[in-house]
Image (tube, rainbow, N blue to C red; front, top):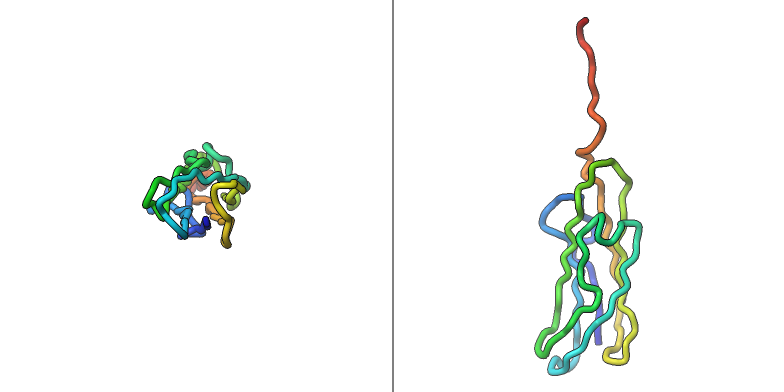
Length: 121
């Protein structure tokens, strides 16, 4: 039995600590399996944030795995972007609710075009 949740749902580019997607298994932890995730959203996987595993291996005794989302502060101003992760079906586990998680990445606002004012000739 498997769930996914976001421990932080809003994060600013380049900030710390990172947002976390937490996969949690319930039931008997003596079995191993690989959880499969689909990652979508308006943020680009591997560009707006470093890539992370989408096939996550649960070894015996492990009940939770955290996937870190550390957004990159890019060189241009942009709107908020999203990371949407959902658990994909597999015969080795049952999907419980919540089965998806959403993280919003806010622009750092530090890459605006500089304002220059001439105060004297």
